[in-house]
Length: 322
Image 1 (spheres, rainbow, N blue to C red):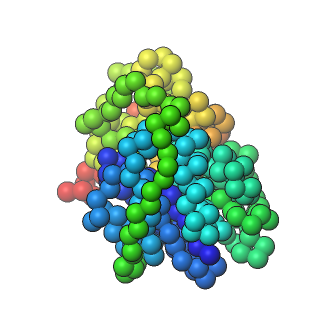
Image 2 (image 1 turned 90 degrees about the vertical axis):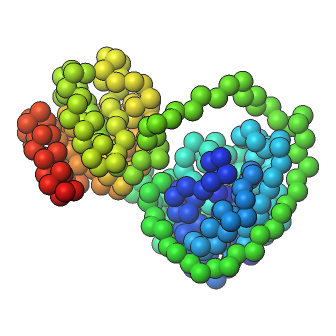
Image 3 (image 1 turned 30 degrees about the horizontal axis):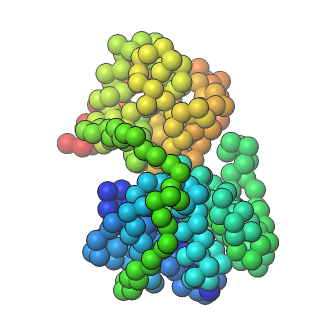
């Protein structure tokens, strides 16, 4: 019996997200007293694959197939379920990102497995198998018992620490019979953003709302983000007004993010916005309205005029960085 973890790569390289998943899988496996198998799909060189062992993988199953270069949910479900059965995995772990959200429900049906989605910590018990997750857009928490033979877990990004290991993982190549005719998804073009930190990768995000009053007032937010090595974001009204690009819109109808630190400046905290940022490890809110809903979700709050507070905050950051 094993714990299988699906690790994504980007242009042949793993990011923190993948190592976080393997670290989580290692801890789950220790609770069950079983081994960890990491699954990698795509062209990844041996040295990069071995990094998965540094975070707890006992074995790495590597699949390189030209037909799998395009993410087709149905085909990936077939391949992952094959490896799950081959490795006799009783727990399957994926990220709670766009890929995991698309594949996990399909795997749940195909493997007749219970699905615990958007988890933020280790299972509280393994007999019965009980997982802990946020519900009602982060306003409450629930303990959910998974009774099926195979369990599927999706882990929220930045919700688990990286744990180094001295495992010397073995690497095994696996061949699948996927053919070109099986691929139903066709990518006609790809546009990649360059020269800017992606919101979904950022560990720190500085975000602005209507309280900034105008696109001309965004300079301090960009300066603070640059000092902190952070990405910039905004609420939906800001992007709708054209003050900021739509790619920066976070919330239920925008990007769902989970940075270590989210700084909300002049954002009231509508439920739709909170749904997209509630998985952030720490939320700092700056708002002139002491009754703004954002303060209910924030770990730290500053009541005051953002146009006065931001320059002072920037000055403090500069002093601490010098």
